[in-house]
Length: 199
Image 1 (tube, rainbow, N blue to C red):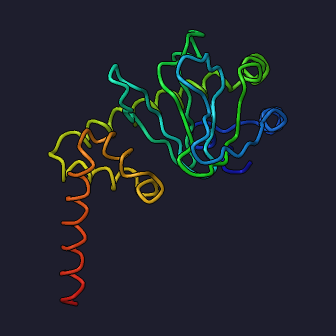
Image 2 (image 1 turned 180 degrees about the vertical axis):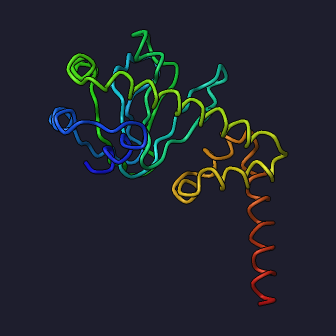
Image 3 (image 1 turned 30 degrees about the vertical axis):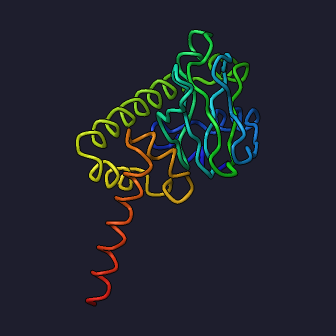
């Protein structure tokens, strides 16, 4: 539970009473590898805080091909904001790439906290803005370069993700083929080997 309150503290200092009220309503779940937090087409009014593990957001295009749009790792929130705020069917699915521990805030709890915790609405506004800003900034940074630079930027921005995610999912996110990704990883491994052999 400490992890979510440490995260909250980076945005706003909650009163003791507010922390106790929030803590009373937190739900803890373990989402097994490849299980869904929510599926495309569902209305999802919950938000999830990733205690450990990795969640992946994706959809299927008209050809039935899977496209990964984002990864969310430890100590971050994940939600479908449009489905949450507009009560519309989600346009993406979210699944765990490895066994993932989450703290769940259900739609009913969110409504209750909005009314009963003085700092809640401002806290959620700050978190939402920061999450969206970071997502856009990360994508802009990653997709500035060619395939090799995209992968290096991916490793920089998602250092804890690469070892826990299928290569096909990373390739899909980066907009490159699995063959290209494999070639890039091979080149980088060769460079590391040559560098280490000289030391």
